[in-house]
Amino acid sequence: MIANNMFNDEDFVFPEVGEREMACERLIFNTTEDLLLAMQDANISQSELAKKMGKSKAHVCQLLDGSRNMTLKTLSDMAYALGAIAKVVILREGVDVSHVVAPELKQLAWNMSDVRTNPVQTIKITIKASNAEYQTKCY
Image (cartoon, rainbow, N blue to C red; front, side):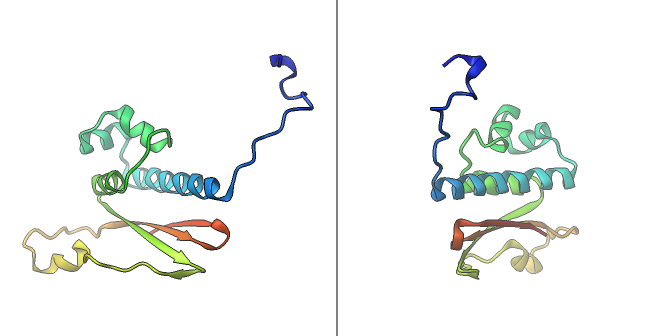
């Protein structure tokens, strides 16, 4: 195929992307967008975030552009570095089926002597099983 007529080739067909792949890409996109918005709200650059995490700027950049796989531990580390808490919420047919097993720091903070004066920002990730839709909310 010649570059000049690459898009005029009648035999070219875009590969079909399954719902599972789309659901995965949507979750990655929404999560990284939420992190970027949290960075913007906290007025923290990628370099500053990398320094707080003890990682290179390139590593953080790859996490945020989706080219590096982000584990839940890394998501938690990034949120912590931003002064936030990451939560994963799983919905089935619009109903939250998540179960809180470990209490949040905020619930335990009342008996600690080193309590933060500023409220903690929470990044909420919502996953819907129906129609493979994903939603995110920051509050």
